[in-house]
Length: 496
Image (cartoon, rainbow, N blue to C red):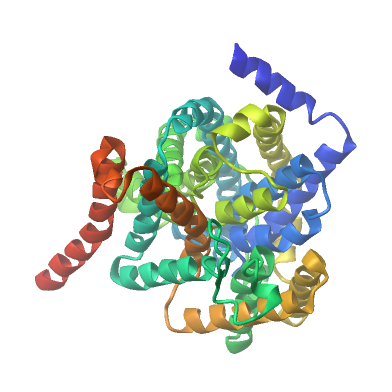
């Protein structure tokens, strides 16, 4: 009853023009970001972040979460229509979505991707609503040693995601940790790595860093490579206008529900994100399908599995972010910085001190999902045409938003130069195969790990991490997550 009452209060906070307008704008912008090849949900949230700086905390979080949710769906539009996934999570969507388009069933591709995304999103959000509070109650009793071990678990999972490039992912997570140490020591107040620069006393601001790593680095990469001519590809499509019937959707109920739960669980796992959820769900759907041989040639099950999983992962990624302060994805890491901007500390106390804000956010995600469904049904053709925006117009637009947004944080040119600098760093890292998302996760987890490590040592010495059962178990799991991918990689290498 308490959960139901708080959820009703959350929905009551949506009454008014501002919340609904913020959610709608967030959904529209999110779909646009997702539909643009090369732009990611984390980049979209990072670009929108400066515009929410002066907004009330609840409106800001509603808009940013709507962007995150809608961008995961938006990536399917270009994956289905022109075989160009708008987001990494939409790569498996293209495996079966584009063959449907080639068969003259573009309506099938867009319809299944939309409804699978909406259903997956609802399941992920329901899990978030039902299990966030219990996790928060458990977190209240956690010792600093357990919080440090959780941060370590998040970092180890990031390092293990790359498989062959696991070492590079781990190195980038460590780089994020190093960047998080710049500024004044949180306990002693000692200056660290400031080089006498007053601007660095508080470290690098999150917003310019995020925009530089995700937005400007992509711009620099685009300037190096010529994008495919999407207009010619689009004009060749045979849009028969036919959409699946209710019975066709009903046949996909097993794979949608199955993939939604897989996506939610993987989303909860720190560092995994929607791309991993999408790929694993697609693979599992193929293994359990009666028509596995048709996957990759237009099987609706493959398309539904990918889209249900990547949308469900959004709700999953929000669970550890809100309850433990550990982001489940790069986009959740950006949302974590939005909480920090509004002086909100994620964790169990957030549920006790700001219940209306938290449950208002949950309610806004459900509403955003409905708005996304309406816009998807009414405006699919429009969003396909948005992907034809010339690169000559898109690049200056992104650069302008990035620089103006960085300056607006503190009205400081230092932040502008920081944004450009991190953009160059991100571009160089991508050129040599180093992922940038672990930097953000390492940066965000850095302060959590450092402060709790030092608190735990002060309270119980270095042995406290091994004498507390929960901490010891988490440390062992962290070691396994870090070591196992490398062992598997060497085994595969010997076989070949």
